[in-house]
Length: 75
Image (tube, rainbow, N blue to C red; front, side, top):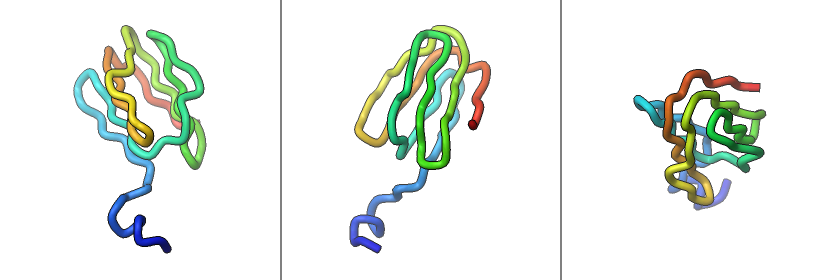
């Protein structure tokens, strides 16, 4: 185990708030448009469906998605 892992949590996390979802420790964004966003993480793919979806914050290990979120699927 590296020293970095003691200070930085590398576990995949989702924080759901009204009209936004914060995804932490994802691997890559497979595709996105204003109705569907596919995000790859270590164990599979997360699919977010809704209306007027947008990426409001994009960092190396975190993405904040806004809009009317209607469904969240784990594949």
